[in-house]
Amino acid sequence: MFNYLNLLRIIPLLLLLINGCKEDNKPIEKKSTSNNSLESKSGKYLDYDYLYMEKDNKIVVTFPNKFLPRNDEIVVGAIKNIISISYNETIPDNSNPTLENRNGINLIKFNGKKSVYYVQLIKEDTGEINSFTLWGEPK
Image (cartoon, rainbow, N blue to C red; front, top):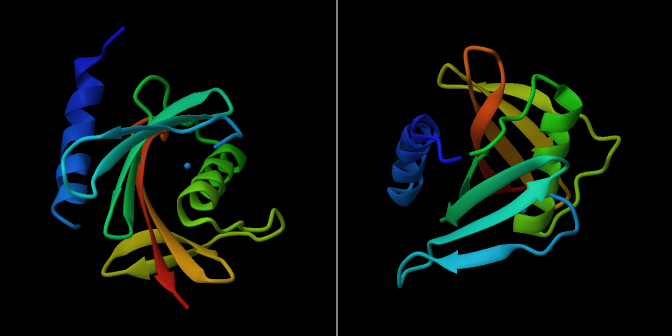
């Protein structure tokens, strides 16, 4: 069932991505949204469907049907999977993320061999994750 409230949550994230501001082994569906490099992709991590768009090394990931729970293992696993698919870099299972504060915003930081990856979570009042923004910065 389509949920308009979820659409209202996604629109600002997509606008942020457009203005500059991948999960399991299932194939990724790609849809071209325009003639430039902006593409919408979909996939699934565990039991969670997601959509994401990437442009200029930034990725906005949304969970339109079922938000990620307040569970660090699931959230970290989803992020690592998307890093693997999008940036072709595997973050080791034994590598724990750290927190970094930038301009008063707490970011989750993952160290890869090629890049350092940062994630800004967007949470519901319940603590569930409805979306996040992800980007990599070369070492």
